[in-house]
Amino acid sequence: MFGGKKKRILEQGTQATAVVVNVQDTGMTVNNNPRVKLTLQVQPDGELPFQVEKKTTVSRVSIPSIGDQFIVRYDPNDKSNVEFDAAAVAEINQQAEAKLAEAAASQVPADLAANGILGRGACVEVQRTPVGNLVTCVLTIGVRLVDGTPSYRATTQISVSPETAAQITPGQTLFTVRADPQNHQRVVLSLSEPTPSVVINEASVMDPPARALREGSPCRVVIVAHAEQFLRLPTGEDLFATKVRVVQDGSELQIFLPVPASAMALLVDGKELPAKRILAEPNVLTVDWTAAQQEAGTSALLA
Image 1 (cartoon, rainbow, N blue to C red):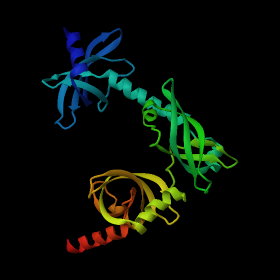
Image 2: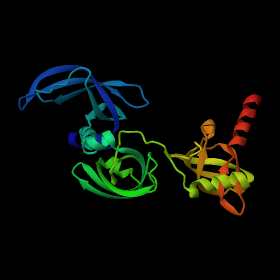
Image 3: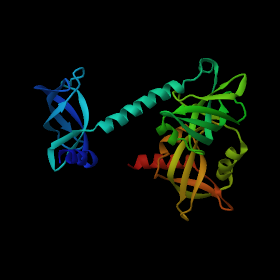
Image 4: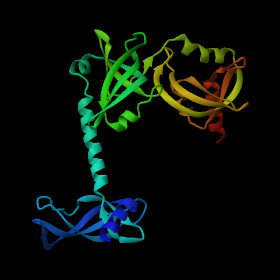
């Protein structure tokens, strides 16, 4: 009966952190390990803390002290029923060990840490292979370096935690990279460094927004979502992958949107902005930042 109740609480009970506020020796031992009575202050998320007493057998070389923390589960209908959530602790420890192993496995080689060329890497393809607590990811990446080297593709690999590996998505995930100055195909990911903005001068990226401003008809758009790309035009604007909705016809499209530093505060999801669009080429569209800043200035004066 008691085993069934414990199993039910561990499977269905509410999880919380518990802090030891008192420890008493019961005078009993089990296999030479003392049985103690702990007073726990249970601290559920979003609820008031409460105290319970819990008798448990502990290792004689690891007796709990006041202030120690545990993860517990309790019956919300009878808060005196509390069990230690050993599975949650084991999972947290496993994740911590995986993070430590990831940090050790993903260290940048000393020569590249000192002399490697910084750059931006974009995931093109990933192959994942579990190895122990880590996942080895073999990556094909598009590389752009800060020294102006033309963009190119390279293959590299890194061992990371399962959680990190699951977040690597072709076409979406960006990395900081370091490349060997003598052999640009020797590229490693640098997980601890911020990704630099790299100047891009490809006509396929620069021409559409320039043509839209020059030749397009006025319209209005709503910023649906945007993501930094760590790319910068030679004229200084940062590029964002941006999904916009055209107010006039409700169409939604994905564009590379140049944003000057002076207008960065206006790039907000859900914000409506003036734009220009070439009607014969509906995907050639960009925000008219000069008009947007004028509107913002007028709104500020009227407020």
